[in-house]
Length: 192
Image 1 (cartoon, one colour):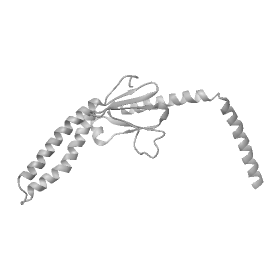
Image 2 (image 1 turned 120 degrees about the horizontal axis):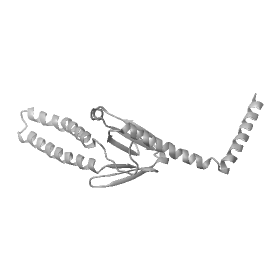
Image 3 (image 1 turned 135 degrees about the vertical axis):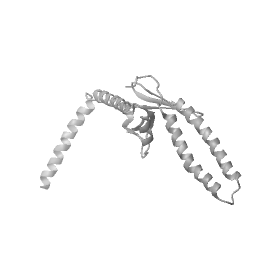
Image 4 (image 1 turned 60 degrees about the vertical axis):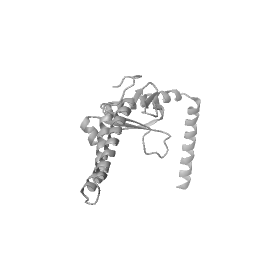
């Protein structure tokens, strides 16, 4: 269980991103390098140049994934989840427990190998978005973290319900619903 009000970072985000990066570069740049090296009419400097560009890109993204993973942090408070991070452009966001509608866990085969997973948090008011409002990636205790978030959502929901149960407006709503039910029964009787 995560401590409230303490920032925490992902456990293996840099490792995951670097593996995805290497896999992507092998497919997108490895094939053209091999093909140009095997074709007879292509000058020697074309595959060498492609290889050099690939290595420079790999070095840059290798550095960037580590810097990004070190900058990402999350915090659970009494009322909300906070996140912050970014290498050049820093982003900070807050998701109140009262808006959270779902929290799901995800774990792909590479993340499973490293014993980490993702918690994706959806909120009310997202509209037709299919992405999560907040994603906590690369954490080892992703299942426990999801349960902790859902417990906070339930507690927040229980507090809101407790505040509104005794309001005069709801007492009037019950009488209105009873009257409406009686009217529907009357209509059904006349139709039969």
